[in-house]
Image (cartoon, rainbow, N blue to C red; front, side, top):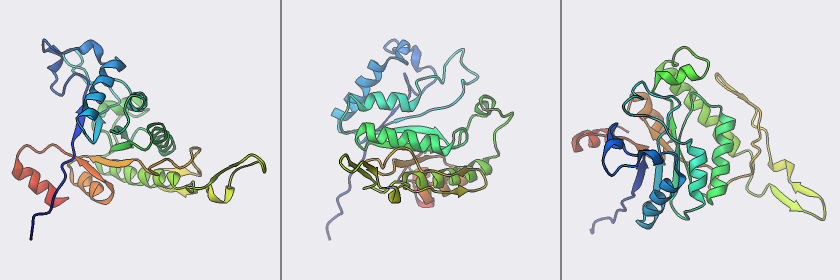
Length: 252
């Protein structure tokens, strides 16, 4: 039997002017451009022309303690990816969004909007937030416990999926003669009531081209791997050796 042909998928991980905290000090670096949309447009076009499948934006919700020497600062992902969707045509657009310091309705609406704007290229890197500094920006003195953050994440995703499914594909009628805008039998409340969220729905954005964004997970803890195995279509991980990567792959 012949070998099965396999396809390698390439993703560009854009992290401002580099992943190393001192990357901004390189002679050829342009740290003044971390809020310049033209800089990111250029990177996105290069990746698309090189046939990359997607580009990926990390994100956090706090300034880290090392701002004197290297900053975790940058543009907000939904805003940046919406802008990049206008100058690209094929590349996937993956943004990191926390389930700990957001509400499901907000996130479901924003990803449905990004999916419409981009013509079906949105992806969500689902995280539970790692930095304890983020808690201090959202009316909390400390992070939720690790396991609790993942419990919240599972319910958060359940609600988001319910909201994306609250519109059937053909719910929009748009019949000018009869005055029927939408078939209200095909736009349904989700009536979710759980441990962390109570959401009636429906979403106020019609079904997007993909229905859901591509679901990506980043996290190598046991809770993270369980969540990824249950829900993720792609997993972001950073293993240091081939053997470690193979063990991670086999475990998930």
